[in-house]
Image (cartoon, rainbow, N blue to C red):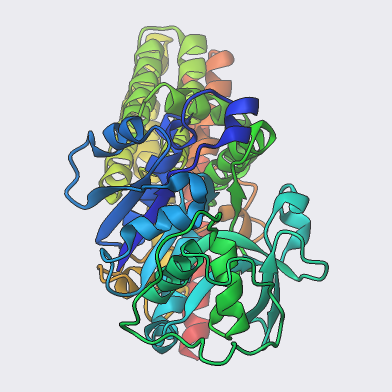
Length: 512
């Protein structure tokens, strides 16, 4: 499936209240709004993305095309001043089937786009018959600036939109700006552009005027000068019973319309980036509070997730060297700093929409090397402080064996939970490979969460990586590297054995 990103508007309110640059080019954490829409569409599996430009078209086109990606094309809209519907008409004749439609100035949870494409696969006959699907949000209490939102009234159990407009008196959801459209939407816009029923009211339950049904191949009247909006075209489709609703129940989105919305968008992105799941108690209540502003700064400075991974690794190595050099207090602080930075790579990846399996792979491998270096540093520091060779070597080996077990056991326990979300995935619906990402419909399992999935008596044992490094920090501040080795070895193996017993019981219950 192709995707179309509308990036043609002037963004007058935004430029008046937030920034003077073209709104699609405004960078949020180092990634422009239009680039975010491109990445969301591509990650959802769209094979080609058409970017419609208008206001300051040259600047927007340069930014979009500078990476030389063959799957990105630009289409300049003539008469974009007439409204977003007139801008969308620029792709008429360039898409020949259902397509994903996104707004460059809407920030959306990638899971919502995957939901839209999965629903498009399930309702493909509806789209091929000239229908249009619109993601709508019935969670009105969570909508930012509700008076400015485009409202909808749904029917048929929430599957059909009966009325749409900014000034609806009675409504039960709002437009998210995520469409899966058919070429029939473009035909409707062309009629509006020519002045045909441009001001027709949206009357729920009213049938189409006699003779108004679309006939493929009908000539379109010449263009007029009226404002042409997607909402007006959607209203006409709603009257004909051809505007389907896809209600969302989870995920987030926001229309970045002005300075206040921009500030809220920053908060939403940071909240989403920090809510990774899988954190132990130290990471959840200490490290994330510190990593959040660090990740925002790193992402805004153009540092990618792999750069954050390398920074965390280097900081932890410096801590190991400080322990070995007889500076345990510095070693402890640096190891804790490395633990905080270890959460930044994932946050930066989510902030910049740059999550990749190879990045997670690099992080996992470097974490294991960092753990080994810290154990070696603690052992060297303990020997320098007068500890015996035998006890130091025994504790170092015990710690070295136990530290990797936390990640290993989490991975194994995650596989014990049955996959959810069976069915056609969003990427498959878009014509691309199945991604296995949350929300795309592919078989998947939720990430292991120690504070949720461990038995209650295990949740507060600081044997996960965040807890171990906090204990190492305390040992460094107390100038007790040998005690640090002992405590790390103990909590690592207690956690591993506890998870082994928990997993064993779970498997036994499944086999009964």
